[in-house]
Image 1 (tube, helix red, strand yellow):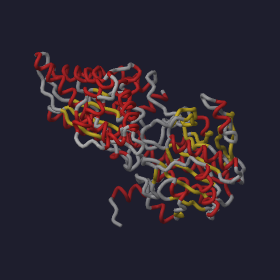
Image 2 (cartoon, helix red, strand yellow; image 1 turned 90 degrees about the vertical axis):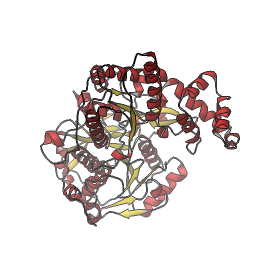
Image 3 (cartoon, one colour; image 1 turned 30 degrees about the vertical axis):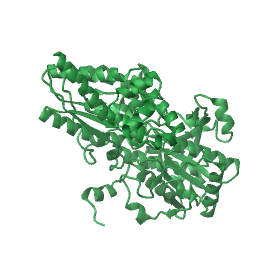
Image 4 (cartoon, helix red, strand yellow; image 1 turned 30 degrees about the horizontal axis):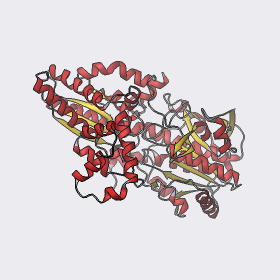
Length: 551
């Protein structure tokens, strides 16, 4: 198969490991630290995870150990959406396994968790894995969103693993996937299945993090990819001087991607969902905020700019959030009657007549295209698919209407042309940055050491990430440490709590202290493409968010 020059060069890249993991793998021993507890709901979590709750944090040190030398078959599964670096997690895991005992095997389950249930496997070889090192995507074994939640599923997983003599399983995924990993680990211990389970923290959204997971893998590469595209649009806007670019960015539950891209590019405006929710800002107030920025720049002869919008921002605007909830309930109850309606006018009247006064007012204030999306784009459970709502188009139309009104009143004399963009899939499978290539390889390598030392229900943890890779710290901690109880589908369930943007955190405070200047002045930064070759201060840098958090 023909390969691009960059592909060939990246295959040859040797990822950097933390200093302790550079020691001979058969001479590393486990060091147990203090016992752990969940931040909240301790008794509930403990009762649900009696075998894996309260276990100690662990690290590794040079010493005498036979644990890593035993022959072992390890299964690995990619779960959820793609994130740059997944291939390197598997590469690091493979190299550690083979470095400890060449007779050990790594077996991939195809197509995500369903690959375990359907017994669809692939055994990795040197030749096969060498074709995926340091590359983006999840095509090495594929991914999927099947959830492992029932005891019947767990029993099938155990049966399939036993069939292949697999005694350890690595689940690479986000918060839901790692919650599943913890539940599966607990089941295997409860039933004496003899299978250890370790998770690896993946999500470009950046909402799987805490003191011991400083960053989820893929976030660095994705935000650098988006920032390059944003920078390109900034250069274009600065050249043509006539367009306002409204850019929606992935990140439904949290605004980490939007905030990081804002820190890297300095746009004229960036909405932060968590701030909008904290201030209970109405949709009209959000529109007015953007209109004021556009009008002030117009006063200075600047009829162009860049606005960043988190994917899920509409769910944080109180009246829209209430509207979505009411629509979900209404259309779930009236599925048949609503489905019989043929025209838009009939559908609109049907819904409007059944909404409360406040939600009806919110619904009627939206552009028609958005009204239709709220009613037509629904998931299999009948809920609004928020990610499909073209929020950027909605804001352009509402801003345009408000500016037209101001122009009629004589208080706005500029020219507004809004262009919409959505940057999402463009960043999920990019060639991983050097940081993500190194970090992911380390996570996989480290995951094997956890498994070899029978650390089940743990998540692979590599920290001190703003330092050179040689100074990174490797270890793990129980997944239960990250859990709390939340209501899901009407029942209280243990889940890993999503990490939202902290409004009192250093990254947001830095952004907030500069955004007024960025709003009126043209302060654009142009990050350019991800650099893989050259000085470390250019090629190995991590995110602005992480640097500010660690200062």
